[in-house]
Length: 410
Length: 137
Image (cartoon, rainbow over all chains, first blue to last red; front, side, top):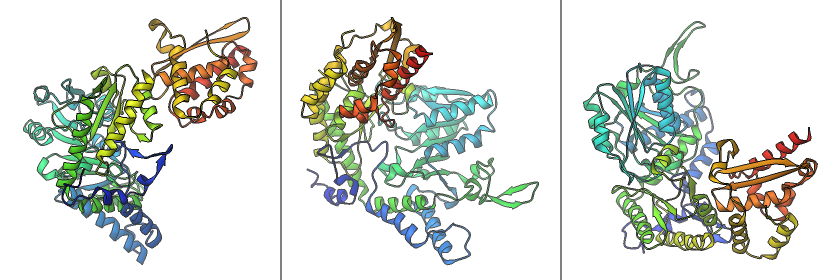
């Protein structure tokens, strides 16, 4: 069914993911929880193994051969990320433990400058990471948190967003793609609007990055953050990209080794970017694994990948329309990767459990977005999320399993 | 509260040979347990679980503990019925002596009660055991 797509051999892609070759409870694994984390291709697993078997050493302390080689791979990874997201300056790429830490770094930086009367604007579709962090930064500083509403279909109410931008708005934080609904936000336009009133813009790219085509210079935002593990890389590593002009004189995040320039017993001065925001020994293997993931992803035909992913979502949506009692949650016109739904009369946890018994891995619950679930008036949803290695046959398997679940729960 | 005894549940579940029949039984059990009224489902009775809400109501009568539990997810309700089959109308001493892990192993449902499963069943068991300890002292 996917043969028509040029340069896109789904079987060859799947063969690169050892984990996909297994059976769960006697059924072939159908992994549809990609918004939570993606699986890892052999190239990533190999790069991590190679690092530990060939050149494990601490970086930036080049007193010997291994340290030089580890540092070379580690810093090359920074170039890989910079090129991947269109960053103009490699020192704007900061390694973090993931998107959450990246948000906390920005909240710490700007949070210390927020004052009573200032405003931070987020949206109703935030993941807790991009809500709670700002909520607490506002509480500490006396600033107010404003929340731009969504429409019932899960699309951002851009008119209301515009209205909420005022000269008090110091920062706008919003997701590139909603993790719970799949809504794609028009981040370039929204960034331009926010800049017009002088606010900084932070984009939570956790769900946006793996669909490819992110260019921070084109978007124009001040910060973009993502996690390695949602981009076929390892857990525990992520990226904060931020404009040098903004980041370079910000308060530091953590203090310790690596991030300093001069230290005496009584005082210290800070190093340059990126080091000043990277205290301590970094997740070297994670960084190298992430770069391998990006190299792997870059070898795919991006247009074919995007066509394939759109096809998976369109196919699932089409199947859903013919499936009695299924309600799709989140029907924004611009949507990617996420198929969130409810089965009439059934709790999502029951649906998820019965799918699991049939080898289908989805996520159920509030998807770390409790206020969004309240806003939509649902107890949570069942969420199937797609990645490049999923097939139309797997969407069929999802609906066959759903049919059985519906029958059992009736 | 009309619940099968735990020996009945062991016998019933042993009878089925595939997962569908077993979980259909648990679903039917979940549907048949007496539901709490909306006004009884207070936050005070809520046992923190991960995905579905679980409420537990208890009182002591003639030296035994009586329970009523409810969940907004039907499989969890069925599992609650299985838990309460062991604990309902029992003395605190019997509750504390009961081998709940062994019981779930016999039923081949141990994954539901494992500490890694975020469905609140473990929390329910801990709460019931806590209530039994309280009643004993």
